[in-house]
Length: 116
Image (cartoon, rainbow, N blue to C red; front, side, top):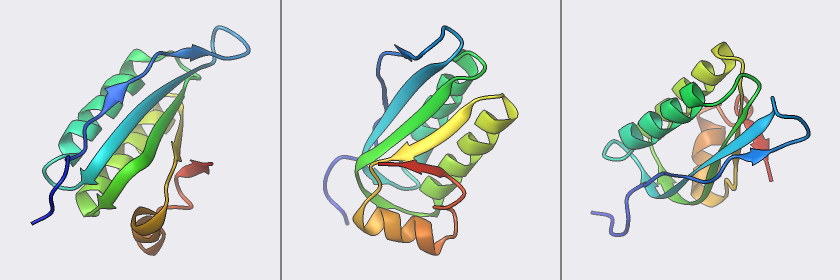
């Protein structure tokens, strides 16, 4: 049994970019992104996508995620698909270590836009 905090997501302020139609919304996750927490992340990402303006950039910060299983991958991919279908961009950042390896092996790391 893993100890520690399961993934919890929190919205940060929306940061206006160059023009008023282009905003960035950051959703951060911490701990384990697994079957007990992926639903919460998916719900937060869906809400972020649906409440953001078309053209917005949705950024998922995974720097504090130490574990990710198939349910975590599913939550990220569903949010990515929803964002694209809704005219938003979707980016993950802060992916390192085991989480990066899992996403790469699953073949989704290159599908998700990755920033440093």
